[in-house]
Image 1 (cartoon, rainbow, N blue to C red):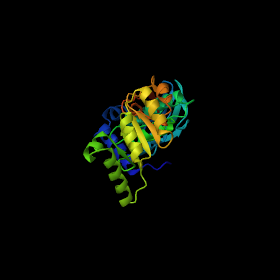
Image 2: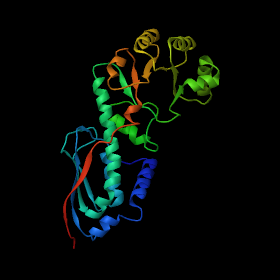
Image 3: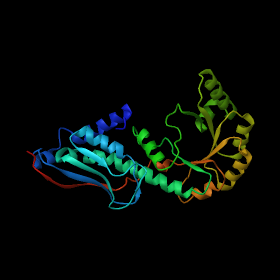
Image 4: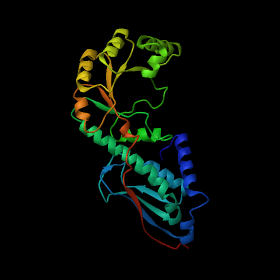
Length: 288
């Protein structure tokens, strides 16, 4: 069974705690606790499966007596009516785990499916889609895992993964050159291997960055398409380029047409629609 990071186990435990409270009174009222039966997780729409291992982990936390057999794997494409997993055992813990299990599974499938749509649009280009840190609090590991399952590429997981000099950093430092120098010196002093990226909003700022040197990536923030094309030509492959800001599915191919290496989009995770997946109980019988 997959081993989940300790912080993932904590948020799952918290989710179960906030949902179960002192107990599932509806299920407890209807079931004696001895009934056994089967249930299925069923997709209600087209999409990409993500988080099936986590769903099994959640069900097992509620009751190890329930068998959870995944019929599909993360990354498999889903269509309406497709069975994702089959569960069998005592019915009460299956029903008690249902909402928490689906909350995680539906969100991860929604992210993977959204990412897959972006990846499909970029398929014939040399540009890759990146996520951002605009994730649900506490869910970043899972949100970014779902992006990978959908075919996307992760940007920074945390603030210590990469230097990313943005507008406020430049103001605090007193200019682009100083901000780059401070980060380069800090990286050397602390023996860090983290890459260094800087955000620019126009060609003048980009030229200053190129004159300074010392960066690995440049983020072209909210640039018009024509200016972005000129920026890519100006960079001429010396550093990697990332387009950011006002990224929508409809604009994706036009942005990729400028020649940027990456396009980052917070929409992959910050406002994704949960995919419609249901748990259906087949029936049950009283145990001995």
